[in-house]
Length: 603
Image 1 (cartoon, rainbow, N blue to C red):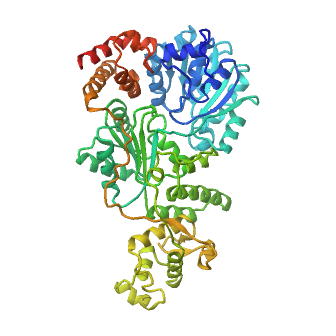
Image 2: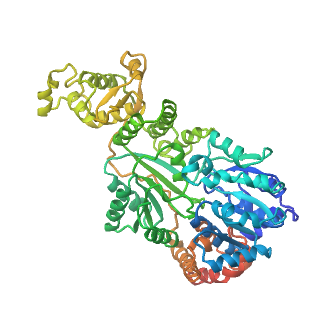
């Protein structure tokens, strides 16, 4: 039961400063531990409120909280947001002008800061650590702590040196936070960063507000356009592509069709990347078409959708990338387009790599998990959370398989025919050629090769090409066939297919059919009744005007979730407005009258 006593300092800060009535998940346990001076590892999902787990202890403990963050954009966003809550926050990074850097250091020396954000190299190599004494520091917080393992020396080698903090500042609590860490990564974080007595807190990784859907890739650009127009017109979102060229081509194609789309990848100039990112953060309804270079450190809460035009690298990557949607807790959607070429490409890349056998085995397991998720016929949320070791009862009611249960069929006999055709044609031809043989095609190449005289020629005429294409994809996904490791495009049988050919293993697979009507099940956008539309737009206009005047993204003023509660509660006084979630004391004093006037004028 949540404590509500008047002397409950943490809850009082949550309510008065941040404007929230109650803690979520394991926030309270983590805050209590760190506030009491104990070190901790906190694993919480994106949008789960990790920042409060060190921000509230920073306001309760004497001294300055030093926050290690890997990205300048993330630091700047968080500092700006904290200042709008009336909190004394600053950051130190390589892009800061000399005069501002001197002002920040002076404020640090004067004890005039509650939180100081710094990049790891600035903390360790810029003389900042030597400037601090244990008596000055309230706590150390290491954000994105998985960087120590997931990228290590390839990403930010300075993370590997952060173990010095526990050694040099005994008695100062250290909290490491991440939204992505499997058991191996957790162990490495604890070993490299934290003292031996640090506590571990693992919150649920479920994001119930996100609707997960997987769609067969047919016409990916047109599919993405339809998804945006039908379900997310005028909303902010991210479209992930595998290649840099694709991000630019797709962004231009969408823009030509009226979508406010921008490209982002590491090959663009730093100026253009910064410009596009700034527009995404500050404007409503911008769609960022990006490689995975975009996303980490983006603190935008009102991203309403994340679409993947290509398969991500793993389920971990998928979870992290889709987690950038709906950070405000409002409905959001994640759609993954997935096809035979994706499976073929990833299998071929893995088998053709020069990695050692052990590494290949681990990567094969990760790929199998990703492909298994795509081919799942039961609750996707159950499968996704299961990969992270979290139980879920299934039937989530917010994924495509729960909303529209897929049909399955006994594909054993058809699979035997397909496997036999791959074998009879010499295990050196691609899916299209094998399907031509099965369906009795009339291509001249079949006659030239003599494949029209094989025993398997035409034995698959009872199924359309769509079924054979689906079956090929699913056999690839299950590892019953694999691409030619020499990279010539052929399909080869694996040892695992023997049980199917012998009739010892039954295959019940997804029955893919081309939809005859558009999918109208998404319903994941913010829904405002027609009678409320005028007031909703008035609140958004008020927020946008304030944000432009102050030079900050609109969500720094108030999140969509806060505006939505204003709309539904219709406060008529500052006192009533103060009870709206997300309206703290400082923001109430600063913005309250403006939003009350906006509501009244829209009546």
